[in-house]
Image (cartoon, rainbow, N blue to C red; front, side):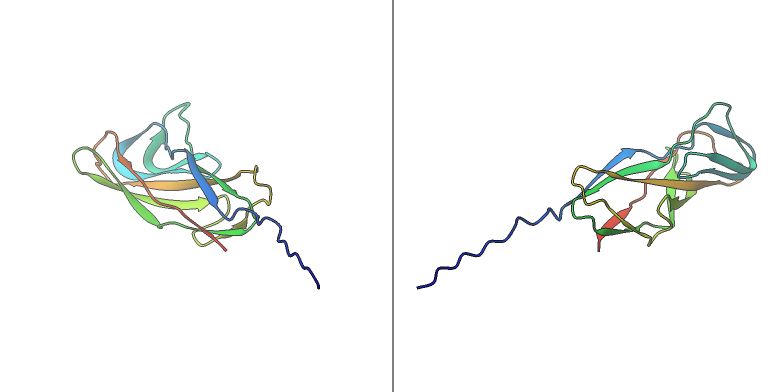
Length: 149
């Protein structure tokens, strides 16, 4: 008689955990009416074109996501190239999303094998402000997809 015992080690988690830890912000800025752009890079650096000017000591903030994936697998990020921000009167501004610190939409990056390690992803954007755009607060959003590979 022969007894056999087979055992398989516990497999690591395949679950991906995502948290949006910081919202995208262009800080405070003004325009002289002829329009232009304001950008915040994934490093948080503000730049402007045309008649758009960042206010002194205004801080730009990239969107930040915290990614945890135990197996150390590759992750492909995708996001829309453009989105819109809207004010309370329905006026919209065009938002160009990206790039990120890992690259443009479609980029692939590796996560750590350590289940306690968090990989951060910072996302910048450019806001287009047309001539004579109404002043005020504009809100909106964009989605980022994280796919295990």
